[in-house]
Image 1: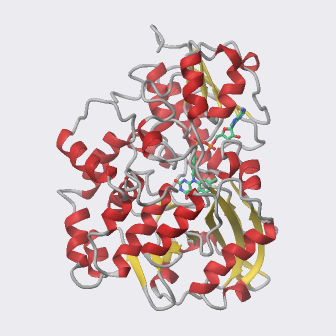
Image 2 (image 1 turned 90 degrees about the vertical axis):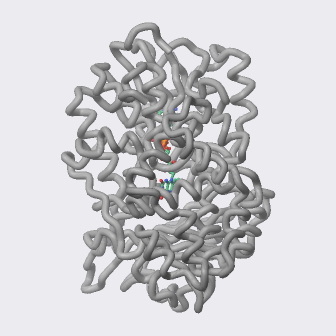
Image 3 (image 1 turned 45 degrees about the vertical axis):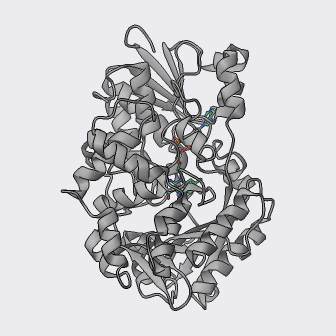
Length: 489
Ligand SMILES: Cc1cc2nc3c(=O)[nH]c(=O)nc-3n(C[C@H](O)[C@H](O)[C@H](O)COP(=O)(O)OP(=O)(O)OC[C@H]3O[C@@H](n4cnc5c(N)ncnc54)[C@H](O)[C@@H]3O)c2cc1C
């Protein structure tokens, strides 16, 4: 922490956290320069258009946490002014167990509960039912949990209640339900943690995603995720900030001159950039910090939608695949232990169902972008064809005939996922494993954003509160180096 507010800051990396840090500082009157290795700014928010004119999101495509984030509370209106629009599909998410069974997550708790068999609807409602306004509750939950774990809670009762729930193994959370549908729905959401689902703390990510989803849905950015980055960049320019692309930082000497330096980089890159300037106590924690399983991703251009057996899946922005809760748990355990599951947990994004503008008419054909990835072990060395076969087989199981709809595809094995985004080491898209230790100490328990080098801070998803587009690693780090900049957090 600096004794006086900085005049000038350099942010290395233009992902959602780097840009959030840049915006918070620029709004506080700091002169900000963002330096980015890639040719396009945006990090995990980048999109591009294929030869058919179909727009694909390279990384993030659905934003369950964005609107519930305190950052969005402060900058959402400005970003909307720069054209950012978030839109939801008629159905937020569906978990397909097999060709005859599925379960549906709606924004409304009541609608979700109504779709669950037997008494499970009542249990869902008791579990996630709004205590008052769902948006207000989600805002309080994210205000407490999208920050370092060691803090004085503003909402102590909610912090304690949610904290106990978040600390449970995910399998205990879905164990409350009787039907395979409700159990699988929750297991699929909790699998976003990329950890074995019987570990303490494995409920945390999924509970947060569900609470936020019941307030704001699971939206996509209209026009593709790049429009979120573009709105952030436009606001940064309006606040006097600037961006340099195509400059990879390998040594701190390349970016000297500002009072503060924020690194939206991996812990591994931060260690290289700062070298032996990092004190031993920090370097030791960083060396202990470890990565989680990876993803293998396919971007499809398809014709006429996906022929899901589940009618709700035909209306959902996000579809989860891989069977029952026990099957999802077994697949996640396999990945964690370095084995490729026979049926890996697979997510499918259908952004055109929320944003009809993503459908393109080409050669008299209606083309749509399908975004899909499977969880695979860290560093899995399958080829692009292996990746395509793996992910396509999962979709085909739940949507017989899918292959006939595929017009074009591009696959990213874990190595290519890393090549697409420098921070995705080994194909890990969470910035580091989400086991209990790293949920609490990310990448260190005390002062997670400090590097130990005066004036240099880490602000990527390798810091608290971790992966996903919620902007809060960036906002919290900016607040750490310029106290009060994060507006009273
Ligand atoms: C395939 C995939 C799918 C995902 N899906 C979702 C989703 O649907 N919803 C969701 O919420 N999240 C999703 N995520 C996760 C989300 O994208 C990340 O959590 C988020 O982007 C992290 O933001 P960040 O700013 O910390 O890092 P990043 O977005 O990775 O940005 C870091 C930036 O810093 C740059 N950089 C790094 N090191 C250097 C250096 N040394 N010099 C210069 N520049 C550097 C990188 O090039 C990059 O542009 C997904 C990620 C991937 C990869």
